[in-house]
Image (cartoon, rainbow over the protein chains, first blue to last red):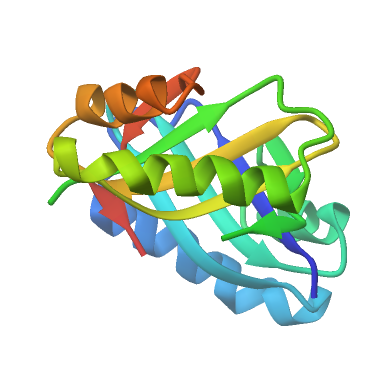
Length: 82
Length: 82
């Protein structure tokens, strides 16, 4: 399954609990779109969140995020990884 | 050790070999700065590369990337992760 890195801006001050809650909201919806959110990293200072997923398409990733209430600002396919 | 996500733009058309070569250049230098580059993901279409590292500071991450010949455009501490 292709991998995607998506980026959320404007999340200044996000806490560990809020990141976990947002990730859990994605996990609860992801199966409908055959997406799996694998990892997430947050920088509360700049308000940036990165999510790594395996998904059939960038649109599927975005649909899960939108339904969970936190649309991504960017969704990038990352076909190359180490 | 704190974790960092850094981002490189302008890498359009990057190949798997080039990503591996760039990552190996980082690995060859990272010990001088007590940095470890753990993962890297690339989107050849938009020319974006993400690197995940463990490091004493964002400046240490950037010094390794600069010495390896590929300065990052952004280096974000990511104290929160899942």
